[in-house]
Image (tube, rainbow, N blue to C red):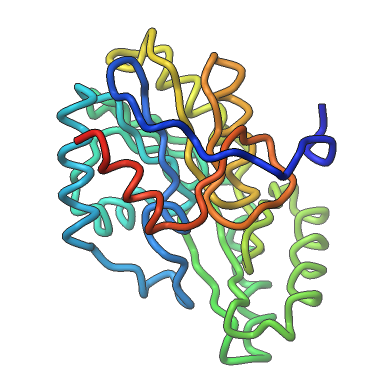
Length: 249
């Protein structure tokens, strides 16, 4: 079944039960509001305290699965989540603290330079280099959106890098593990093994995470406005997501 065939009229999830679930949480747009610039997202006392409580109540069955770098995720979450999949799954730190990391694609430097040349046309364009990927943000230069997407598509075809579409961002990443692969890997390991996975995310980059959770007997939960999705449930925004996560604690 394709995304386009799935209904966008999703119900709210039932109250969260922590007894047998494993939580997989996107960061931007799910745990933190989307910011104009990536560097504008900072630690938040409510979020930090919530994650501490969830990690304890779930006995470690908590992972953040994000497009951010591992260092950036740890900065924003103040190191409270041990299991993190970063750069869309290309880096994964498991619950035991072991790192699983892909090797960078040799064309990343070429793509980054091309993105920097493109970004020189407008001060609202931001290039973010992540080691295993490079992203072109155009939230502050929306009039450049079509040209930015065309630039990213051309570079993907020329370099062999994988194009990752996002919310006002185009990213070229090293081919390799995805968010779905990260969910599957976590679920094959302690303490996640045998639990029911719930994946919360807001963006197109989270769709394969929704699919993996469903494949493993759980569900995806879309955060944000209705849209075609593989998620089974929907929560309207970040604030409502935090409320839902806090309720059973």
